[in-house]
Image: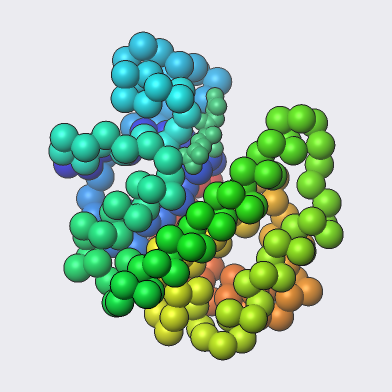
Length: 192
Ligand SMILES: N[C@@H](CCC(=O)N[C@@H](CS)C(=O)NCC(=O)O)C(=O)O
């Protein structure tokens, strides 16, 4: 059985949500970060970064939450969440890397330097989503995909305030539609 390490209030949340969307059973090894479990030799053997989440799927040990989600989307649920065509799959990579490189990375670095990211900065980033969501219902096309899950999960990081996208109509509507998904709601319950 798949094993997922990490507490729900971290990026582990997005992997829990992905597993819930796919209906894949898993063993959840949760611990408070304050326990330092993710810095023990045993854990570092799985993930030398000493970060969460880590996923163990048979012989495969994976870290990097977005990579984990793309792996899960490729091997489970008939690949339905990883795009129907090579172009959709490439678009999923695009949005996922955009989330990591253009939003989460800079926001985390700012936090580590004791800087608070501004509403303007966040809006500039999220405004990028508007034209795509004007043309189509979801980031990679007509259907919900890993791209939506990965990018929306950014808005559930404590450093990023969801209210900041309220002025972007298409993004706000997309947030509302996706947050209403039963798998998302079930995962939020587990986060409490
Ligand atoms: N890029 C990595 C970042 C992982 C990461 O920084 N996780 C945080 C929790 S959200 C963590 O492990 N923090 C504890 C620490 O750095 O000691 C990913 O997406 O998985």
